[in-house]
Image 1 (tube, rainbow, N blue to C red):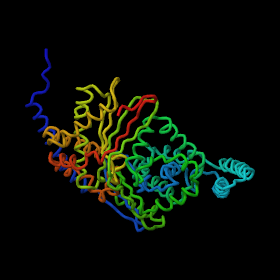
Image 2 (image 1 turned 30 degrees about the vertical axis):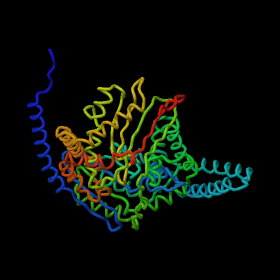
Image 3 (image 1 turned 30 degrees about the horizontal axis):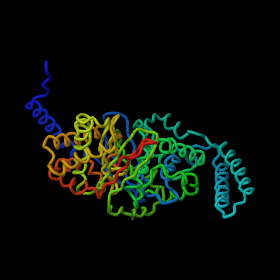
Image 4 (image 1 turned 90 degrees about the vertical axis):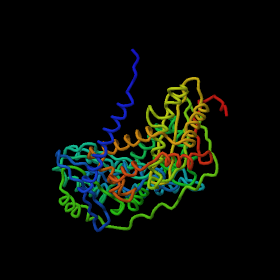
Length: 505
């Protein structure tokens, strides 16, 4: 018997129930927002607390307002290195004898500085270099004897910590963990010590680990190569042009002294924001924060990034050859997430390329069968500053990047020529609002949203108010941003081409 699918009446009933449910949640948003409390220390560090007493756990999220976009030439990748170093301990954690270890670390820094200077000399003294390398290796080996490796991790696990992690992006570096609610003071002591008395021990070993990450993630991965070259082509001025992990030549030369200097510039209290969500009392959190984090000396917040990517003057097209199937990425410059058109651009990407009901999936995968995988997304490679709306496709066997590019162009042109349908816009809004609701149910995700909106959007309350921006998007808005930004002049295309095949363009 033929499957007739869902009836129009049933579909409308589903939409009505869903929208009613989401609007009810909209009222809940206001209630949750009224329960959020904030406190800023005299040194500039801000704490955001949302009490939830349904389970004896609490999630902590520390947001450092520094990512790879703050890096300059010569130190690309340093934000990510510092993230790794933040787990190496302090004067008291991670060491067997800090006084002895400290003297050796200082000695290593001096030897490494001499070694680097000699290696860069116009006529390097190879005998001197060999001697310095031997002295460095010996000192490093001795220093390692004083390291209590993994002590930071072990202490956190012993206290019931879960999800201890950190991640670096183009826009930020973030540190997360969840603990039983009776471990609040333990977190306060450990986290404040981490940012007041850090010791970047085992630096050179960890730097080698990160260099290997680059080899495995970019230099030996065709897709990694494509993304790096595509991003570098799309951004000629803004620091979004380099990968978070940095250039290999920089990784090889960044010193522990560089990391210490970078830490002091970007990890001051005024550049740190903490969200705590779970079974805690806000007043108790703020009192402990004064005791533990209030001891950290204050200072000015680092100056904002000055460079703005200039308007693109014509289409850019790059090709990467590798042993791989073909892949194509098409990116269009768009403003940062705080721009008033951001919600409409999110709707555009969702309707064009998010999920199996999206336009390019329906056209390229289901109907024309010229691609096996497609998608569209915003915020590439970051959200904070003007970024890219990007569309990608992986051609199916026997088909080409060129076919996929033309098909993508056709689907984007349809949005420019004719407003999206009411059903498409409603599906987007339901999906976006559901994501917001799901995020609010989870303590860790909620903490992440509060810090992101406070730092990037300028106000933690946007966590709850963004639903209004989603609701306000119209079909005309979506068509308007498509006309404005989806232009050939504003476009960068990156193609991954199998080695040995000639481009057909």
